[in-house]
Image 1 (cartoon, rainbow, N blue to C red):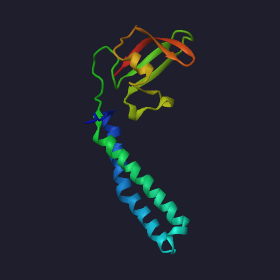
Image 2 (cartoon, one colour):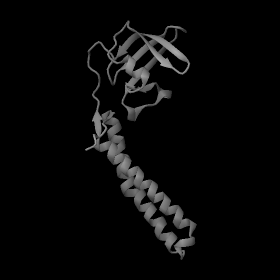
Image 3 (cartoon, one colour):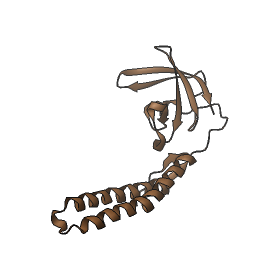
Image 4 (cartoon, rainbow, N blue to C red):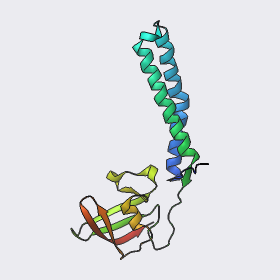
Length: 158
């Protein structure tokens, strides 16, 4: 029997997924059914591009619904970090690049909430993994495509 993967996410992200699933199963599914019904009314479906497009859309929709159901079923809610003094999932970390001297801020999140452009990095990423469990003042190094990068943890925000 296969072990199901757990997807770490916040309660807010889980609620967003449930809302999206409800929309897809109610509103969007009816819209696509209407498109298929309309395309059938054009006659022979074997040479009907509107029908083919609607069926393709329906397949994509069902695939997305299955994906959302799997994420929701296997969601593991991460609670806000408590005062442990170490970097944990859900906290924000301010690090100083030891080469450039610049400070950067990252929030450690589950894989379903990653957005590097907004400073949200996964606990499964190489950088996220090397930060977990570390405390203010600790130095960490991470191997990146550009080479090894070194940082010092300046602050941990809860």
